[in-house]
Image (cartoon, rainbow, N blue to C red):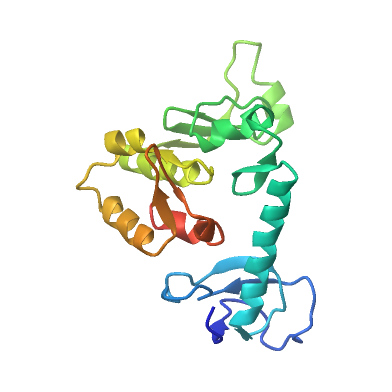
Length: 220
């Protein structure tokens, strides 16, 4: 990385540079990428200062990169941005249902549900939940939402790209037509080295993993 200063999006500008364990938001941390695009990237616990040298961000990236190599060498596969397992059979099926935009039914107060683009949440009140009736009764719900086709496509991309395998190309061909503006965004992100296409999937590159939230936000 080229040595230069980067803007910290938030934080106490009077904080001492050696203040530990303060979350900080970084702007431009990768070469040849516009700072505005990466404004607001969250990177580990560094000092909460107004300007920091890019070397600080480089250290964070390097440490995470080496940590991933160490885990892989010990038999731990990174199958999702923040999840590792010793083999595919030990992946968390519960979380994979979320990342693959599957359907699930939440049971209990405040539990969330999703069925084919229809989302809702049970009211967060135990008394009301228990008073809603017998086994066949519907509990009181809040935050009811019906996603249209465009939002469903955006969310499926957002969730699927969290997985290291990425989003199936066959799904893209079916749900993201060539006229969709996301296609242009995908080409731009690929040119920046943040996305890559395999024969079967579109996925984040290793470089793209470090700024996944900002990359994915472009596709919502």
